[in-house]
Amino acid sequence: MIFCAGLGTRFKPWTNKHPKALALVNGKTLLQRNIEYLQQYGIFEVVINVHHFADQIEELVSETRGWGSDIIISDEREALLDTGGGLLKAEPFFSNDQRFITLNADILTNLHLGKLIEFHEHHQPLISFGVTDRSSSRVLLFDSANRLFGWRNIETGEEKMSAPVNGNLSAPISSAGLIAKAYSCVVVFESSIFNLMAGYGFAGKFSLTEVYLKLAANHPILGYDHSCDRFVDVGKPESVAIAESMFP
Image (cartoon, rainbow, N blue to C red; front, side, top):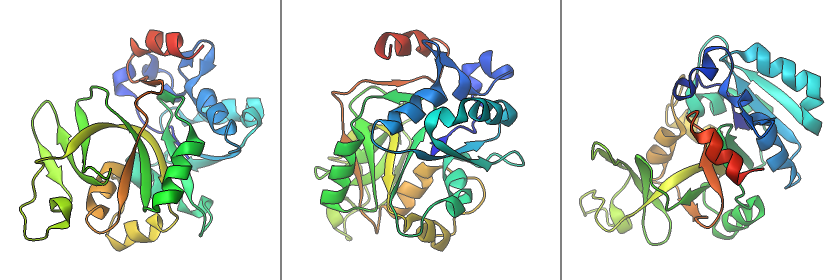
């Protein structure tokens, strides 16, 4: 699934008239680049959610015949649901027993999906996602075994912890000794995530970060470090030049 529904408020003025997923990097939209990225690893069935200027995305997908992929539209025109809510709404489009991958349309990377999947299969967590050592205003916190335990806002110092560190239930919840890494928005999920989200009461609009922090206390969620790979968050107009220098 590629998340395309966001308002793209940081990407104005482009997003005053267009969805951010259709912003161009060296003549190709962000959406096309991510679809072609998935195709490199044999993934040709893709769900995309739409909300902001949804018609433009649907028209381009139709005109290009999905750039060679089978594209399913998850329609969020009535209400924007964020990444977690968007994934839960799209549940009917996924197989009941098959793991799947999600990524954000405004992220470009050459993270090797095959290696991420191998990491996931070897450790068998509920969720595995890419992380790097890059600078970020918000980071996730991991122990030495790459297991998620918390989140931190670097600018405000706010922290949210999911469980006592090192599994010691008598210890206070603390970020002491944890390793901060930035989230890459490329994720491998086990299909059981849908039942777990429902079981934990998730509904409506919510982010995947909320899901991670809620579930990490009882289910292994792991970060896969790919700091040596190319990565750019095309979140602001000035990021396009950086993206174009990295992704011809």
